[in-house]
Length: 302
Image 1 (cartoon, rainbow, N blue to C red):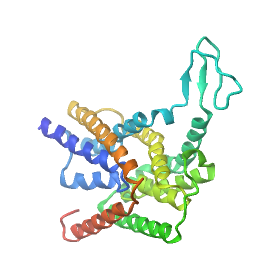
Image 2 (cartoon, rainbow, N blue to C red; image 1 turned 90 degrees about the horizontal axis):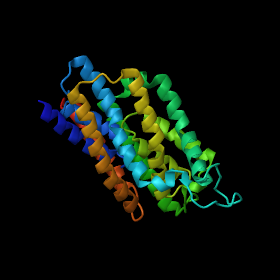
Image 3 (cartoon, helix red, strand yellow; image 1 turned 135 degrees about the horizontal axis):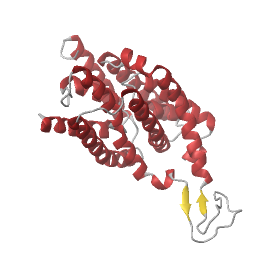
Image 4 (cartoon, rainbow, N blue to C red; image 1 turned 120 degrees about the vertical axis):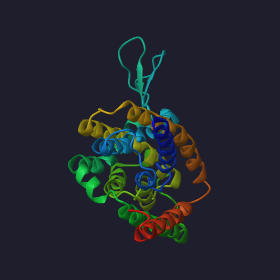
């Protein structure tokens, strides 16, 4: 029934909005959810499979819009000024015309670091995306990676407390190309192995190279913009847009819900990690991974 499919898309949007930004794996949760709440949206077996593969990626655009809206001033480097700024002013570049175009060079540099961090996952995704999805997108991979990354969080947090190490990177402006590339390699792990969590992997990488928790989380949010836009474009090129009305409504509703929930979760996480560490997410990941393995062994999850 059509209304049931729309309700399912609301549920998927809620799960996406929560798990995309918390370091607990959105893809892993959506794959698990699909086992218990199959999402067909009114097509045949083949179109359903293609639709769900498309839906898993494109629903993330709603979450991306939440990042763009929340961090607009930190991500958009251009502005129109009625006055004529001094060309010698750092971070500004004049364009011709009545309204000069001011360009913030610090934001452009940040975008350069973001794009550098996206290179490893982008290359592997373009070359081997379908193969990776066929081999690794299953509950067993999700369960194992939930546990592995959860343990990594615990080890890193223990090390930081034991060493009483102060972060060397206290703002996104301090991220250089080497740090960005290292973060990109951690993001690559998440791109290959569902259950790793893109945000989880990049935050772990950020903490290891000396980022503060807020900077690691914020840079993770920024990375999501080109990553998810690129992934969605690849899906459109591979699968096309030939979906029925119910499937399109499901996509739009799922994206809208993911956007609204993401706005709340992004603000929550930034506030939370200013006073707490990531251990609670680590324990959640480990317990969920163990539960999934138990469910798979007993036949509850296939």
